[in-house]
Image 1 (cartoon, protein in one colour):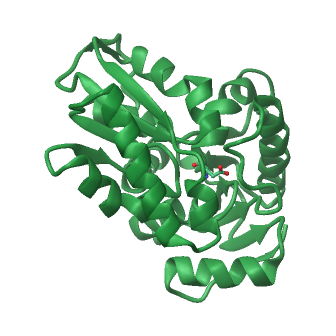
Image 2 (image 1 turned 45 degrees about the vertical axis):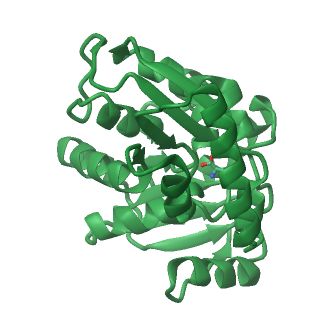
Length: 270
Ligand code: DGL
């Protein structure tokens, strides 16, 4: 039994960390497409081609269920994959739905019609490709009415984090929050719609002010996945080993990941 976790690079390790803590008994196979990161500035067709290739690799590693822990892949490729690519006995799930279920006060997997919810003004911070896809607004519209979403494409933040330049990342986050606030002066909630942004959560919170509720995905995805596996135990797959795979240079990626997770991590070539 193994569950696949896919991200364009290192950001998905925030999700991997949360799911492994929540379900220590489940082996997870992580695949980072570091060779092709960042995805956030690619076209939807490009993201689709890269994501399907990576998910195929995770199927080969014994995973019947794969989580796209990458918002850009979830936004730009997931729907098309689910409609026409995922084999019948496999499942690929994204990271938007758990977040939106939490934001709209729903139980995990509650597909009842949209209704009025408490939150009315939501700021979305995400990569340019995620913002362009409008996938967040679409998924939200299935579940809630009357919610105003203002999206801010946070160019440069992922690259700065991947390069380890946190001073630049902080400056960029503050300027993106300023830009958002010019369009929506008083958001009630803010969604960090990119796996890398939890590393900057304190900066987002500080720049937004303490009254804004900041939704970060890792723990929400972990809770929702645990609930999903309780309901679908057959989706655990045949793999038995936890693995870290990368399309990039395993030595370099292992070093960065070890810094990122603050524990020794060994990546292998995908
Ligand atoms: N991990 C991707 C996400 O969550 C962002 C990184 C990228 O642009 O590749 O959107």
